Amino acid sequence: MRLPHNSFVMVADGRKMLFFRNDGDADFPKLTVVSAQEHINPPDRDQKSDEPGRAFASVGSERSAYAETDFHQLEEERFAAETAELLKQGALSGEYERLVIVAPPRMLGELRKHYHKEVERRLAAEIAKDLTGHPVDEIEKIIAAQQ
Image (cartoon, rainbow, N blue to C red; front, side, top):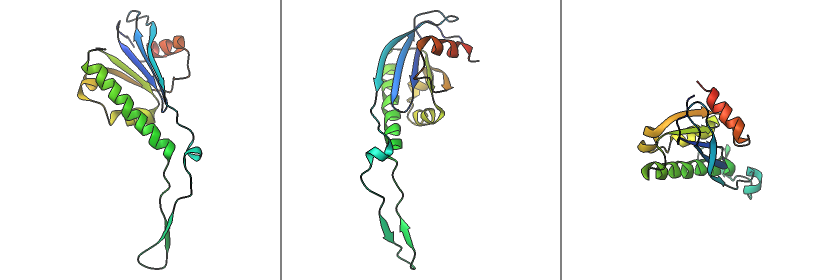
């Protein structure tokens, strides 16, 4: 993929986001970190305090259990909404003209629910991969290799 000079690249997962700017040219990207944020999101077992409740069904003698809440997943969804808000603010303030988002498929799905029309207009590509733990030079190569 050709990544024009000054394009923004956001690499995120459910708890970490990295913003890069391409200081290189379209054919040979050189990503520079603009900002990084990490959201503390412990495993679900560390966030809940009790087992889900139980109730008697109003008809018949069957018992039913309330659905168990996945607090870890809720935090990831909230993080995606906050990330989309940052993207919106950047688009509306003119921080970037073109944007590439790299995130695991589940995170991309959550982000899409919250995209502002200006973010969508500037979105050049989405790459469904988890690259938050990769070094910058590998991220550059993976983006450049995309069709």
